Amino acid sequence: MKKRFLGALLSTAIVVTSLAGCGSAAPANEAPVQTATIENEETPKAAAPDSSSDGKLVVGFAQIGQESGWRDAETMSIQNYAKEHADEVELKFADAQQKQENQIKAIKSFIEQDVDVIGLAPVVETGWDQVFAEAQDAGIPIILLDRTADVDESLYATFIGSDFIEEGKLAAQNMAELIGKKGKIVELEGTVGASAATDRKTGFDEEIAANYPDIEIVASQTGDFTRAQGKEVMESFLKSNPDIVGVYAHNDDMALGAIEAIKEAGLKPGEDIVTVSVDGVKGIFEAMVAGEANCTVECNPLLGPLFFETAAKLKKGESVEKWVKSVDGVFTQDVAKDAIDGRAY
Ligand code: AHR
Image (cartoon, rainbow, N blue to C red; front, side):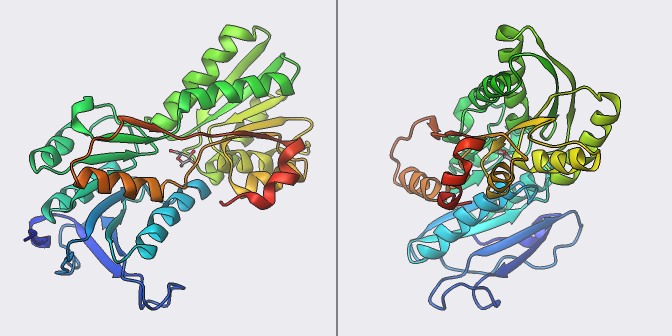
């Protein structure tokens, strides 16, 4: 019998809602997906319901938040899989609102609820050792989804996701082609301390330094993976660097913000200043079709099925690979029109 969640033991407010019966588009026969918003409050608003898992695979997932279209697509992929397989799977989902402390609280609550497997997209790389050790002591395997954590490999079961360094390298090669291998460019970085930002920067900067001596990265600053901050940082880049020919953004949302800033500065994005970004969301395809963006390096967010299949293997005690690598493509303006209708996110 599973341990029940003792909400009062946690200094965390956990708001649990059921998607089924809340006016969502979910079919009536779908079992609920529990959604928890972790907040920084002293008194819990509500404890998780005393639900029985009936032999189902019970998974807790601590999501980062909702910073980008890519993140929303990943969340939908996870939640949709849980709804479609409600007879086999029970998902406890926490939205940490971009805060590591909230992800740690969510993991602790999943341990308290004695889930079978914990999934985590770590907002930053460091600071996980203690809570991962607690999960290990409780016999609960951890799956890292889409981002890595800087911990000993023995503390997690597997990482499912893309090679961010390779994404950065591909972005650099495509940037070089677009600008004739010379000129000044700027870089919009993702969340400080996130593996997706650190590695995309490493891959890009090293590739430029090694192979393109006439390309200069004149400014590089975080836009926190959001469209709003991408726009804001690009505005200041444009003021201090009027002669740039390209912008590399660690995600498409920041590139879309940068495109707005370029237009407002009276320049033509895609022509006066080219863009290369990462993710492959629909919005960047629309911008490429409109001639305002130039290239996106794909990073697959549709990880829900693989995540649950891997969790099921772990529950059965089967071995899994330490890194289940996503296979991603590169899309440029010339293929965007043909590819856009096939995009799933
Ligand atoms: O970890 C993947 C990155 O996180 C995506 O590129 C970005 O859009 C998201 O916020």
